[in-house]
Image 1 (cartoon, one colour):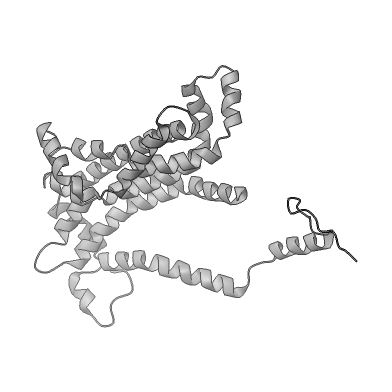
Image 2 (cartoon, one colour; image 1 turned 90 degrees about the vertical axis):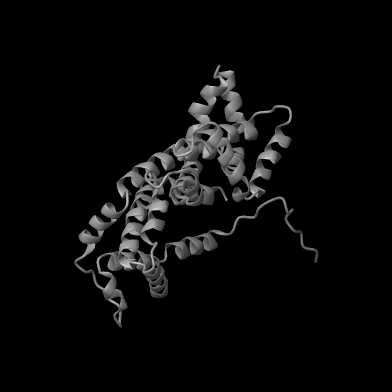
Length: 297
């Protein structure tokens, strides 16, 4: 007896009993093994930060004890005062906030504009221009240090934070990332409907594209802020020791014949706190973007 098979293009829905079993399986509470694994992952993720706080609250001699101290000491405020006294830490924090904030805002804005143009607008040479931008990602940054420094010296920007901000105001990764996201997140029909209603390209970008790009912009902003905050080599080359960024100051704290680990990790703890604040501020948008992509998938 011949059996007829449903065409592969038609999706056969499961029977009601199977659907109920699937729903019940998703409603089940996680088991003890799941909670144990999550607890272990949380512990090993949080322990380096806790250990940094422990070391920052001790003196350097206490770290040589066996076993090492695992509880907080009483030297945290003393080490904080030493960190701000020995190096210009306050000026470094201000410079890093200015540099990282300006770079993050400019990269997100320009990358979203360029991504909108490459994803949804039609113009001559679009593919060649996009490929040339992507090709810049394959060039190591260190290859451009010497000509970039010569350019900064010619326009007399050496020793100023403009020399750190302007070369990083846009990058190929941000343009490629936003192009890929906006090509799927913004329907072309929605843009055409906006044009029928009389919206200009700028109004479409501001009222349609920018709200749709918010989750991807949060991810790009976090990555950009993290990269700019942790940048060390170029600020070391172009800035003066009296007007540094946080990473340059941290290298100064750890310099010397005998490394003061309590002082070094105190500075590292100060440098980590702004990154945690940024992650908490953008975490909702990042999780929302991940969930949106999961639902679409």
